[in-house]
Amino acid sequence: IAGITQAPTSQILAAGRRMTLRCTQDMRHNAMYWYRQDLGLGLRLIHYSNTAGTTGKGEVPDGYSVSRANTDDFPLTLASAVPSQTSVYFCASSDSSAGADTQYFGPGTRLTVL
Amino acid sequence: GQNIDQPTEMTATEGAIVQINCTYQTSGFNGLFWYQQHAGEAPTFLSYNVLDGLEEKGRFSSFLSRSKGYSYLLLKELQMKDSASYLCAVRDSNYQLIWGAGTKLIIKP
Image (tube, rainbow over all chains, first blue to last red; front, side, top):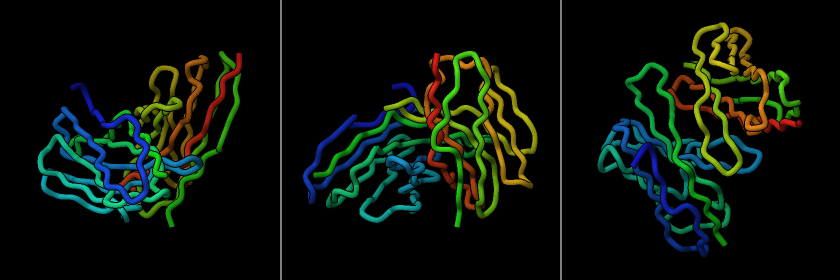
């Protein structure tokens, strides 16, 4: 593993189903983030975690949950998917002890909810 | 509310120079980032400004004026591979990134 990986790459999901998007990083970054990207809109923060064991809500957290059991993994769960959750989901991580605290992104998961 | 404004789309010619502007209104300021995003790919980091002035990195430069809430990304000697979306993001008082919708740059031969 080099950097951040996400799985699956893409998924078509029936409305009402539960889905977990996986994110793993090997950079030992303390902070991790989940964003969604929709056409014509900027990246919007769903949830974040500043360190293992802690999580926080971003701009659009409703319908999503996260956990951070360890440094490397930050899964995003949709408990009961709805069509408005159709989007591209990006996971990112950063080393908040570094000056710029630059965020590095995974390749994304394209999710379609029908 | 918090707002990041950038042009939706710009067109430039291979070999030329293009300037992509970004204006922002945020609750606090803790740095401004520019990212490049090719279609279907993840955003990748280009530059970071926290103090006023110009930061140069090869063909790319980024300028910041905190008093004006303004930044620009300058791309020189444009190449076809520079065709991408360019995202401006500001870190606010809560240390969260607020993102613009991005500027799609089209390079023509």
